[in-house]
Image 1 (cartoon, helix red, strand yellow):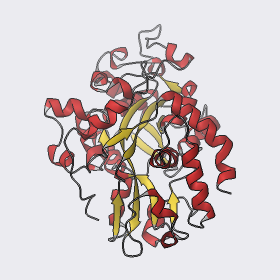
Image 2 (cartoon, helix red, strand yellow):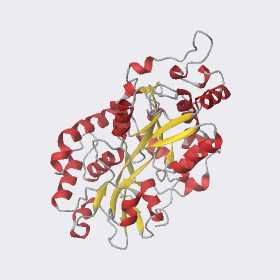
Image 3 (spheres, rainbow, N blue to C red):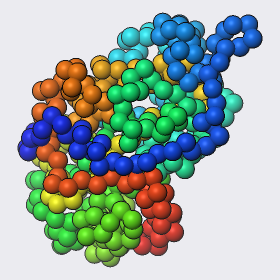
Image 4 (tube, rainbow, N blue to C red):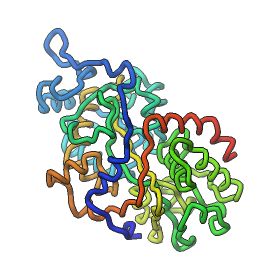
Length: 381
């Protein structure tokens, strides 16, 4: 696979954002926190809600350098260009040691790690989460608005800054073209050609990519995001056909051939050509399923200034273009396109978007998460 061969308009980011009517509202008491200085005039980084609470951006940088550490979690280096992004942060701020913990855990396991390590220097400072897990755990987040806040579409951000969309894409099917035919539709995957071969990236009750796989199966089965039951039914059929492979997808499982057909985000599937030269990607025609991952600051971050500096870094022009270099659509894509700061060549290389795109709202995500919790395990046992 070169990339997905179909090419796209530069406005591909808009296609995700304009359909993402998330209608996010202030979600928890954490939203009431306000940045302030301490009695002696110093900054309380743990309550800062913007750069202004530090004074200037240089003051934020100095506060983060004084902490000297940043704990990140669930950031695989081959996921949406995270390796290059982390390395650039370390190059830019050599005074800050980046501690990369558990790169392959799910969004739900990030929250578990924060709870287990609360009060310890090893707790994550920041999160990268699927929407459903973010909505369920807002009490773990501290509100923070980056300097480029106004460039981020309202549909992608919780109004107080508890969590904010950062990069996104479309759910796709990646496959080893040397062993399997290209699937033209969801139903093809139920056939004998795909016996014991089809995997999803995690557990949909815990992992955003797997949750989205069920969402794609729902809308490709003529269902709607108001009820994910058709998607659950599809994977139940896949299991009964003997085609569902219950192995978590990683770079290693792609390279070894252990997971030869995979539901995953298009920007993640696109990277696997480096692991398998015969790897190709399909984004089904008809209704496409899109989604963004979200950034959040741990309300109990052991390094609160570094956590906020990391957020500023991720939403800068430079790093938004690095998301694009990883095949993902950055949250500020449309504003950067208008300003002329987007990497136009990378934007033009994105795959063409489906004719119709859907993104779950807050209510739909919450309801789907509840339904999956009740029905998923029995459906695929």
